[in-house]
Length: 171
Image 1 (cartoon, rainbow, N blue to C red):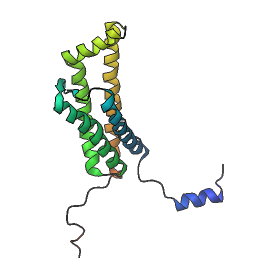
Image 2 (tube, helix red, strand yellow):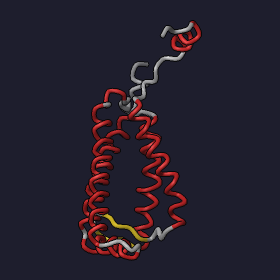
Image 3 (spheres, rainbow, N blue to C red):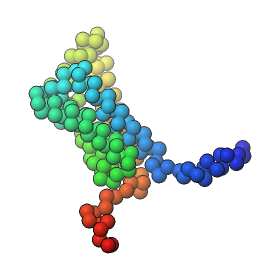
Image 4 (cartoon, one colour):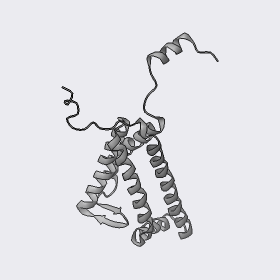
């Protein structure tokens, strides 16, 4: 198939995006997740959370839910979209935390019992519930591992932050 003159002109005028597709997808995922977290704060009890396998309640849980699940997700999404190197590193660290947090939440006896209780209330057997929880853990690790891999292998696309005062040194 040959390219038309209009297609060639459009390609010549609009250079390819420096933002890799995988980074775009990850950034959009964080932005949408942060935005969807806002109504989620009103649809469930925001004063309850599981952090590193421990059940947290009250103000600490509210800070975690709003800070981590809404504000941080939006900051990471926008920063990745802008190809900020410090945000790329922060996202890798947060994603590692998310993997560890998910694993500890599913292995915590109290958290696991609460999740299995919800499975029983849905009319499912405990064996199916354990399978569901195990599947959630594996999928979370695979997806978050892919995010880390993409951000590590696409490091060259990110712009390092200039040192403070670097712009005025040459004057």
